[in-house]
Amino acid sequence: MKSGVMRIVMSAVVVMLVVGASGCKKKPKAGVTGGVGSDTIPLTPLGEIGYGEVAERGEFGEPITDVSFENVAFAYDSFTLASSEHPKIEAVADYLLANEGTTVVVDGHCDERGSRDYNLSLGEHRAMAVRAYMISLGVAEDRINTRSFGAEQPLDAEHNEAAWVKNRRAEFSLFRK
Image (cartoon, rainbow, N blue to C red; front, side, top):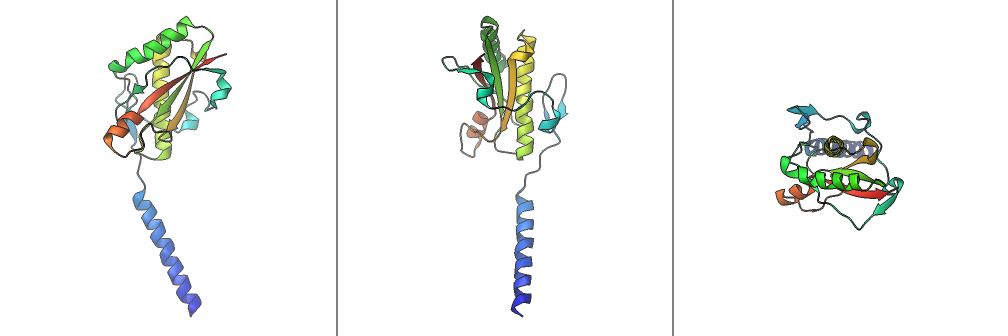
């Protein structure tokens, strides 16, 4: 009898865990606004984007720490570059064009809303939007690397709109070859 009761209790616990976990899961949207000449672009799984590899910072050369640039901000659920953010990217491009031996890594970040996979993809799209703009300014493609951290490296760990605004960003790291 104890064995039968134990089996029923264990089954009930498993069912509660499965039901509870599925109710907490956030579903990613089918796409986000952004991109050049497009209203909605479905997010692509990271491995299918084909724009370079996620790598450790040391793989890019010697870090340049005496120069820094402002982060590029993004709207919620978007990888569209606002015109107000262009001067930030232009400053980095100008630096790269004036310093031939340097490269940049553009890191895409998101706020905590959305699934891990969705945020990693959105972060990569943000980094790639910045990269595309830098290329349009004359920076050689092979001098711009991208990575995505999704929501895994927030600037502000609070759970409110003010924190989320800070966390939706692209960051720049410079390296000397």
